[in-house]
Image (cartoon, rainbow, N blue to C red; front, side, top):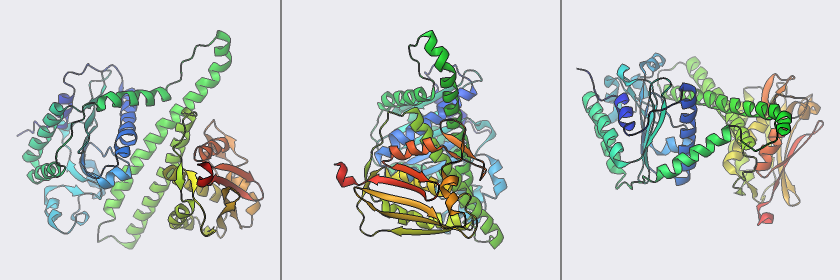
Length: 459
C-alpha cells in the first residue's frame, strides 16, 4: 500500500491559493535562507520561547542553539544518513524510547529522526508550533516556477498537521501520539495570522540589503562608481552565500557527530576522532558566523547595535576553558589575568563572544608550539582595556601576524601570507568591534589592545 500522506502533499496543500512561482532554484534557495534567518532572528528568538515543537524535512532547518534546546523536534531525513550508523540503538536513551530502535527511528540530542520516503521529495519544509506563533515554511514548484511558501492561517496549519498525523498513524503510531501529546502540552494556541504582515516585509528588507541599492545618479557618477559598487556588492553577496552554504552543513555534521558520541561501545581512537571533528566543526561555524556578522554590518553600516551593560570579565572566564582547549591542539598555552571587581562595559554580549573568539584565533596563528598567548583585562580611566600579547620567541611578530602585513581581498576579508589563513580584514575587524562598543589599536611590538567604554559613564 502506498502512503498518500507525503511531505510533497503537505507542500501542495500549502500552495493552494498561492500564485505560481516565477524564479529558478538559485533564487528560491536564497529566499529559503532569508526566510529561516528572519523566522529565527526576527521572530522566534526575541519571543524568548519556553516551549514548542518543530517538524522539518529533509534535514534540520533550525540551527539556533537556544531554539534547539527549548523546542521539541522531529525530522524526516533521507536513508543516506544511516551510513553514519545513525540508527544504532546505542544512540537512544535507556528508558521508554529504547523500543524505537526496532522501528528504524533514531533520536538526537535536539530532534527525533524519522525515515524520508522517496515520494516525499527533497524540497525543504519547516513547521513551528508554539503557544504564541504557528508558522509553516516550504519550497515548492516546478523548475523555473519555484516558490517560497509561508502559511500561518489556522485552516492550512490544521490540514498540514492532520496530514502528518495520518502519515505517522500509517507508519509510526507511537510518534503520532507523541506529537499530539506535545501539542496538547502547549495549551491553548493563540492564532497569529498577522505574522504574515511582518514576515514578508522583514524578508523584503533582508533581501533588499543583499541586492545592490538603487540611487538616482548622473551618467558620470555611474561611470566612476559603478565598477567599484558592483565589485563590492558582488563580494558581499558571495560571502553571504558562502557563510550560509558552509555553516549549515557543518551544523548538520556536528549534530550527527554528537549523536554518535552517545554510543557506549566506541573505541578510544574513534571517540577521539569524533571529538576532534566536533571541535573543528564548532570552530569553523563560529569563524563563519563572525564573517557573517561582518558582512551584515557592511551592508547595514548605519544600523546601530543594541549595546547593554556587559560583564566582560565574566565572559572571558566562561570562554577561557573553550579557548584553552582550542589552543592546546595547536600547542599554544593560554593565560588569563583579570583585575578583580571590574565594572561592566557597554557591548552586545552574544555577538561579543564570537568577536573575542575571532581575536583569539587570528592572534594565535603564527605562534609556534610552546608559546603562550596572554589575555589581560584591566581598567584604563573610563574604559576597560583588553590586551592580547605573546611571550613566544617571535612575540614581536604578534601584531604583524594578527593585524598587519595582510593582503586585503575586499572590504571584509584579507589573506595572511605568513600563516596562509583567510580572515577578517583589519578595517572589517575595527568596524565590527566599533559596533560592539570597542576601539582596536595594534602595535607590531606589543600585540593588540581593545578599549571598551564603562557602562556607568554612558548613561
